[in-house]
Image (cartoon, rainbow, N blue to C red; front, side):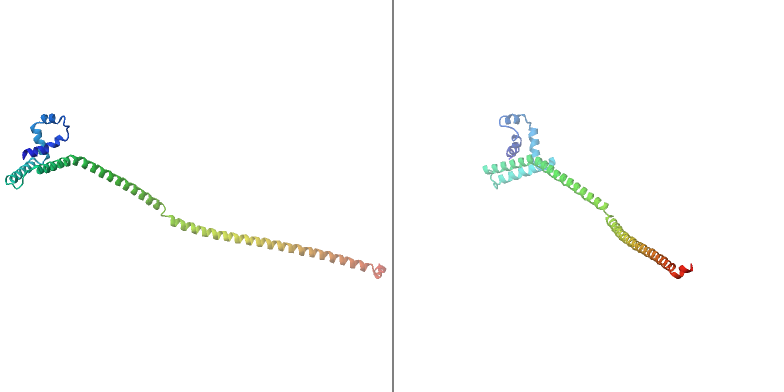
Length: 213
């Protein structure tokens, strides 16, 4: 059974070598290194735990084989070899996959953090813009009030212009009437003076007046 365990966990070092130099590598490896690689392949964190797992597994396998509860045949060897190979592959690929998964997760976390920062900056910028416009209502009310006052002033100015125009027109009419009356009076005075002079001349031309003179 120990030979089976050695064969199983010896594949781990055999996977990293080619058939040409596999024998040379096995010759260079010392028994301590082989034992250490065997212990490293066992589950557990401490030497005591790994030794316990090895002892329990070996004892259980020996008990099952001795009692003929389990018959060790080619299928069993193939199963154990497959399980050992899967365990080796798992231990070999676990660390790179873990690093890849951690790198991917960290990358996604960084992307989410950057997106969160950008969203926060955009929201803060919008808040600042809205804060700058918080007095728009008051300003609009004041401008509306000023526009009303300007409209009233324009109305008053237009009314005053109309009054001035009416007053100017009335003054022009009055002036024309005054000139007309002055002309009439002047003409009447001329006619009166002419008639008085004519009457006086006629009176002077009478025989009585001529004889007296």
